[in-house]
Image (cartoon, one colour):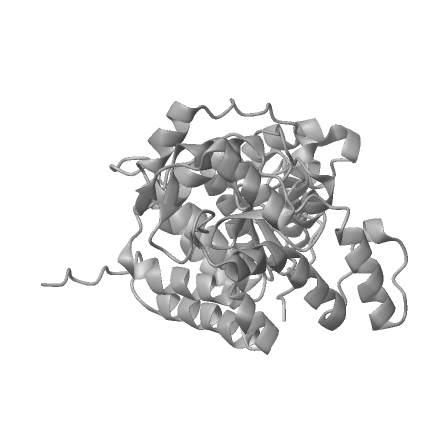
Length: 399
């Protein structure tokens, strides 16, 4: 069963609300440089005739940058990389079908219904029939690596890479190049992600998914003035590492603090901003931070890894949100993976949580009804990490 993300008026802002310029087109030279980052066997790239044959056989079209990437080299030697030249046709067909099959699974078993489909029929069989018909007209998602996908729209450049399991659909890279740099080196662009296909954009801008490059989509949880101040401070820490909170998040955090009797002269002004006054949120948030003495408590950037201390603080915060139910385990695990594990040089202490998160996205487990147990493992590992020293001690190297 898919894990629902908690509702929140302070959810991650739609990437389309702040339009970003399209990334530069991927060249063959760029693609060869990216392939050198990947710890896999790289076979000769697919020729134009081979790419055409794959599209003809499986009934889809590669996006332009995906095609350039595969023409530069074909990653092999791992079950995560689809082998478009010599792979099992049934396996490739199954990978291509998983996004649609996952949505249909949630339509049948978890009540999912896309708002673009109109009223949901009362009978499940009819709902499935209509959903299948609607999905037939949607640009398909084409497997890139594991459960990371690119929309398949011919001639288009710069789609974001999506991490997809059922209706848990998450932006995992601003484009193909950004994703590969982040997945395999821990380096990613700070540019805002763009949504490029309206149907799939719903899941990360208004639906159950999240954009891991956007500020934390958590349900407000503060019950005490201290927790309310912590929310304000952690939003400030997110800004340090390039994650920009939306005006709605800043205002809601201010309102939560005000209702819990936190005292700061500018807090009522921040909490009371109307929609047409949102451009003042950043300025008032800065004033609240100063009035509460939080500016001097923010971690410095004084190590070899960019904002290392700030990222460890964010990881601990996300683990707390997972444990107290304010952040869905899958979403929280992805945040720790994306902004913590990768950016901190892949510390081994976080590897069990990363593995638990990855395991929770196993499509076979979802079909067998065991995904809830796998999601619970993320919570258990979060509790274990929080119970130990912080930052967590790294296991000694083997040998």
